[in-house]
Length: 479
Image (cartoon, rainbow, N blue to C red; front, side):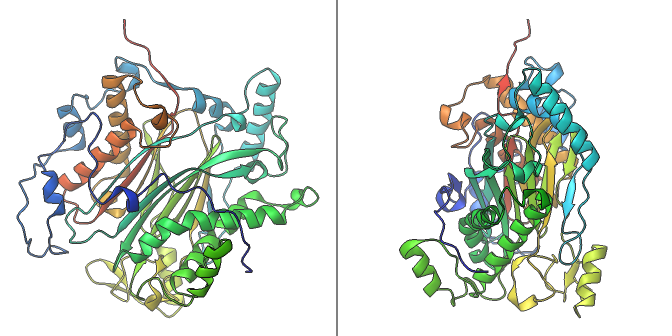
């Protein structure tokens, strides 16, 4: 594909390159386990080997008990708390999209069939238009910046190989990329644009080079691919465009392109002198062939959540009190992945878990040139319309998911956000409320999850992004 010079996307307001690799203290939360922060920086041997420096004792408890220790009853929710929490933004979205199913892309070797409830989507569109005609607001016209917090810690590993990034307002999505050619709420599908926000977690292995490269590059590559797709679409051919397939193409091309750049096969593009410099260095691999990374990223706008995943990091949506997984781990023992690897002449060997050729415990990644063609960078993509009862989205490396279930993570994140607001009301800075810096409530949830994972015995780096989807909250004190 020919490189196109494009303006650079906004710089990330947070990444592990600028924040360092330390645990950020929660704004208003006490530690939930007896772990000294300095112990997280002690060097330890990997995979259960002898620990170079002893760790302080860690107590064992359940997530519910841990929450009770912090003053939040395990069964208490928003309705039973001293403050009730509602969302201006998400309540607008619910009437439009309630009942619309999830769309999974890329379930096969090189992509797969799209599963999407088009009839429900059409009914939701009709309902949305009726509401706007009655004087309501369009969900697409709502300025909705999600609030977020993060943690990225070394944990019990000797080196930090994870990376995370948050880029608010990284791209203006044309409406047709969410609705197709239909004119919804009287908005032109080509000219009307929605601000979109990018979040990503990259779990490196064999070294940090590829994860760090993806942190700095992948969101910019996605902007370039989305811009290419947009340039190829006009009003004349919009009716023939399947917007869900365009998302699949954008992410597959983006991940494949970054994988090529890591291998030194392609230029990272850009414009001006920077583009020339990148082109000149295109033959230099970013990392040795044994280095790679997972990638779980999310694009969030006022109406939809789009998740793209490659590897065994994970994205889980907390909808009401129920976890909704938005990605499926790429493991060698997953039936379709096992069949793909074997068909390509590879072997899945059980050696301390199922591994490709007994080495890599995931079946897809960016990098890992020594295991191609069995390890591929092709992501799976999920699109889900937002709903009124969406609470938060959690993106995390397997250092969290190996020791906590989806249910536990959603329960802790939801209650920790609520606990912060119970203690502090709506107090936060304008920068935090605009998404330009970590939100203290979401930050408290991310910190709580990482500490709980340590307490539960996680042996890996732990990186967590918690995105609070109820960006505008109303508080009502109990009388």
